[in-house]
Image (tube, rainbow, N blue to C red; front, side, top):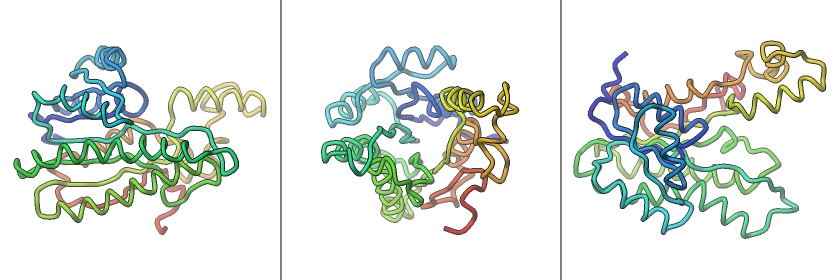
Amino acid sequence: MDLNLTGKTALITGSYRGTGLIIAQIMLQEGAQVLVHGLNLEQAQQATASIGGGVPVSGDIATTLGCDTLWEQCAAYSIDILINNYGGADAGSWQTSQTEDWLASFAKNVLSAQQLISRALGPMRENGWGRIINIGTVGSTRPNNRMPAYYAAKGALANMTIGLAKEVAGSGIGVNIVSPAMILTPEVQAAYMEKGMREGWGETWEEVEPHVAKDIPIGRITRREEVANLVAYLCSPLADAVHGQNIRIDGGQLGIVD
């Protein structure tokens, strides 16, 4: 399927590694011009080299200065698509996390997206078309007891996404949030392989994964490519009717009713 992304320019935050890197790769394959973001330029350059294309840009977008730095590098491009993939969890608990930890998590997972959205909205409105995709987590509606600052921040990101969708209704800008459950990354696989060896589950991933995914109806962990393909579709003009949605991609783990 041709997603009609040729000629579109996408900024993907945090795309120097992990799922963001695969999203950048898929968007390149679909014909988009991709601005690949790292916290520093070396990260971004290594990422573009690894996927064979893209424009490296950088900035620590957990800060206003970093957002300004990044946006200055993007000034030469007309950004049609903003994918707010940057974010992440830090170890913490209700007992150990301090106010500063909560503020840092909010800055990383919410304000980084908000600040770039505020910069991108004007040009998108003028062009009469755009896509803003935020990357969340199923934990935004089903939080765990651990890492409370992270899950609270991701909950705020989901709430912000729906409010933004209402704000831009009728403008030609599509807004959605994609919320994965656990994603199979090299780090996740390595950690579970180590556990699988201890538990006697087997010596290959094919033997270990069914034990890890015993509560997932499809019997396996979501792949990064699956998340990236979903994001790419939502960026497409073909997805005009998908707007203001929090779309879970979790192998059916949480069921169809929240």
